[in-house]
Length: 293
Image 1 (cartoon, one colour):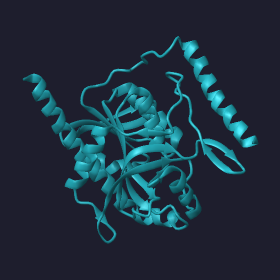
Image 2 (tube, one colour):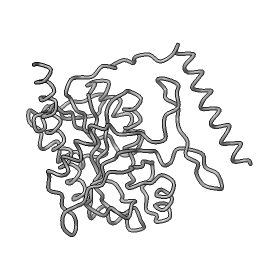
Image 3 (tube, one colour):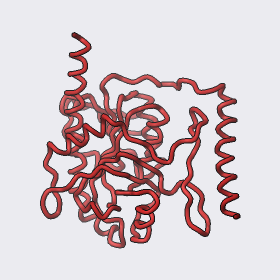
Image 4 (cartoon, one colour):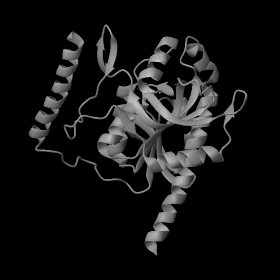
């Protein structure tokens, strides 16, 4: 009963804080930088090695910096993109995403990098296309474990969903891209799976935790930035998707495996994202041609 009452109080507090925020702000309003820059895609990774294979493919490269956060702007397979790394963890990811969104107002955000494999259907080298993202460490902790909760949307006062849904068009583009590039696994071609990517500020090296994430969230992969970026995009109304190459199995061997296999995971995720840029540009030109006619 104590846990149930606490859950009720948390839910009530979220609703109340949202109502107070809504009232104090006079209702939802357009934020600064709420517009989008036409046909510019923001590509984010957690650390430099994840961003490097994408940045190296850019043409017309321009270095830039915002509040000390460096980035590279250029053309990736014909599409205007901004590429940078956020730093590991949800706070770094949210901060960098917000700064770049405010400055460039992209029409889409793509996350590229590595993740631990949770589902038994994925292994090292495979690519997971995140249809949904969730923060696995957000909620109420008790002696009975964690009850997943949600945080209020600072812009509207409403409660955010537990799962952030990727843009349907970006999912289709990612699937098509994955089918048109060569992805190397440890023992033959890598597989591609659409699924659930969960995010938390901990590096998972526990078979027991894997079981919990599968049971309660249906997780396929786990990492440390995606859902934080997804939340920012959701609150700003910007299409997003998370693409992750599997570098380890998030079990007791994960700390060693990630150092051994991260390169293959990085390259596979980057290959899909680079192809996505090409397909997005082709799609945008086709739409423009129809509008022009």
